[in-house]
Length: 306
Ligand code: 8YV
Image (cartoon, rainbow, N blue to C red):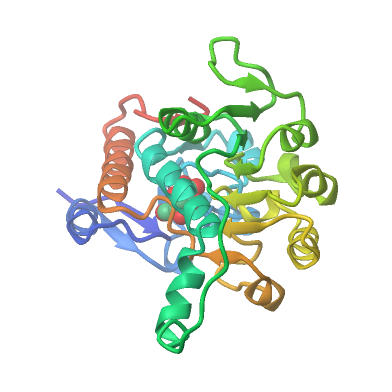
C-alpha cells in the first residue's frame, strides 16, 4: 500500500515517534514539494500561516503537535473546511511543572546562584543576598484553561492561595475569580500567564498590571510571548516595580531581545514547557492518532475546538 504523503513542519519526539511517522507516511519537509498533501503536521509555535495554507489546495487536516493554535490561520481553515487537531491534556502537567520551576528559580535565585558559583564568586568570599520565600506568596493565574487549572491544582497542593482570571468565571472552581488582569495582579504576588496566544490576549500583561503586581511580584510566562508587553516588563524589572520574571516564551522565538537578556532578576528558558519525554511522547501519539483517523475516514480524536 502506498503511504499517504504528508507535510511535516515539526519534529515529533522522542526519536521512535518520529520513526513511526516516517514508517506510516511519506513525509515531506519542504512545502514547495507538497502541493498535493491532505495533511500537515506542525508545532504550536510554528503553526501554518495564511500564505502557507494558500500553497496547499488539497489540505484537509492540520495536526498541531501542541495546544496553541495562534499561529494557524483558523479563519482560512474554517472557510475551506480544513480540520485542525491539537494535543490537549497530555502536556498540561509538564507545562504547569515548568511554570512552578520558573517561579522557584526566579524567586529563590537558582539561576543567579548557579552563575555565582561557576564564576568563582562564592569561592572568592562573595555572598548572595537573601531571597523572599516563594510558596507563601499568593498566586494568580491568568488564563484558566487546562494548563492553568492543572497549575492551580499543583499550587493549592503546596498550600498556596490561588486566584484566577479568565473570559468567564468557573463556578465549580475552588479558586477565587477576579474579573480582569489588574484586579488579579492586585490580589497576588506570583502572576502565572497560561492564557492562549493571539490578538485577544496581546499585551494583556501591561504596565498597569505590572504596577498592580507590585514590588514583591514575579511574573511567569509559559503561554506565548506577546501576552506580556515586553517593553513594559523590562521597564518594570529595571525600576523595581516588580521583583522578577521567569519566561519560557518570547515575542520572536528563538530571538530574545538584549533588553531581556540584560534585565535584572529574569530567568529565561527556550520554550521547553512541554519538552519532557513523557509529554512529547503522548503529544506525538495524539498526532499519529489524528492522522490515522483522518486517513481512515474516522472521527478525529482531538479536534480543535473540542
Ligand atoms: C511546544 C506549545 O512548543 O503546545 C504548544 O502550543 O507551544 C508547545 O507545547 C510545541 O507545540 C511543540 O511542538
